Length: 243
Image (cartoon, rainbow, N blue to C red; front, side, top):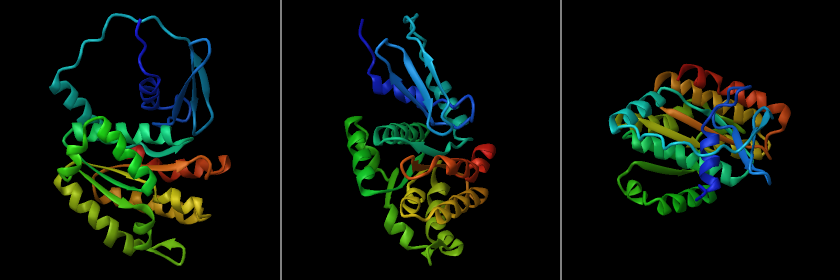
């Protein structure tokens, strides 16, 4: 019997919301020595062990129109914040998040570190999706350089954020359904500016009140203390409730 790659199974686990804290994209799946899966939420710490199941009959593939309907409905919601443990967790989540948007005819805006942008490009190349980059459906910005455009005195300036990031988002969201992945919050938090990171999260939420787009902001668990993770969750709650 041929086994499916473990990383594919981890992606399927990550796409489900935690049954306790309800955070999407927070679940991690680890295969144990017995063949079972240990599933853990990186946001609230909930975990459960799921025993391996025997394969059943193949699931019929949905029609193209049905898949488009599901993706269109999915665009009504946003995962908001992603607390991740390692780069594989982050890149698995971001890759599937962007690819789902392209499948629905949308575009992606990535504001990330050079290392993560390069790793994401390598993954897209392996999947044969580099043509999307040439069609203007993926726009990339450096997180640190973008922060310099609107952070003053250690804190994000709302007017400058709207004139720089907000203007870019409005232009792209007017052309196609837009999905944004951002690491600027994590850059601020890693630099010791948790206040600025939370303020930036609220600026993103305020922008979503005026412009329609999906948002995924990543926070490394190495940077955010467990006691502060509820603050991160609440900063993005309005996104998840409204979408």
